[in-house]
Length: 198
View 1 (cartoon, rainbow, N blue to C red):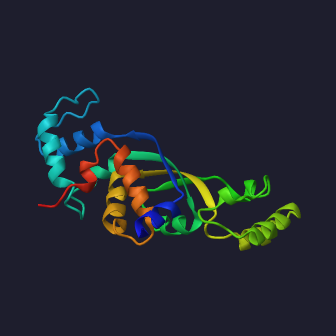
View 2: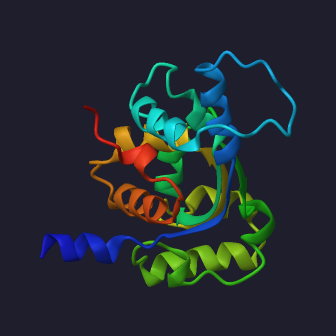
View 3: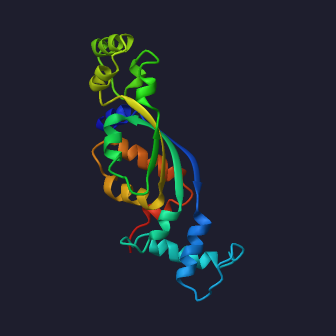
């Protein structure tokens, strides 16, 4: 029953836009283990199977040994509550974000229940709507509940995702579990993230 309750509370959308950098990341690993010195763009012929095996070992070796993960980039559209974004903002290195601007959009349309991750009282919505109609931007922003859903386009890399997986995997906010599940289900190489240490 508790699991069903938490599942209903997660109002979040996580949509993959793009993924890039796998081949260059594998070539980077190859460079670390070969004496060849050719640096032309055309010189991309190498033993991918052997390099992939090495990548599967290195992905668990934090502290710089898995830096190839930084070279595989991800782009996602994410719609999540402000309280989750506040925690996501912990991940600054290797992350770039563009948000749907609250400043430019909050006054443009009526606020409704679907703009929030959890039920907001009708009284609260009416109060915020009165501020919106009066053009009271600063007051409206200061009273906006943390459950307000904001959309951001986020660019991050596999190494950042690995940090999120290790640090937030068992977090009490159900949004973290939902985020991790959605991303792992959509990336091309989840084995680099959830690979078990030997």
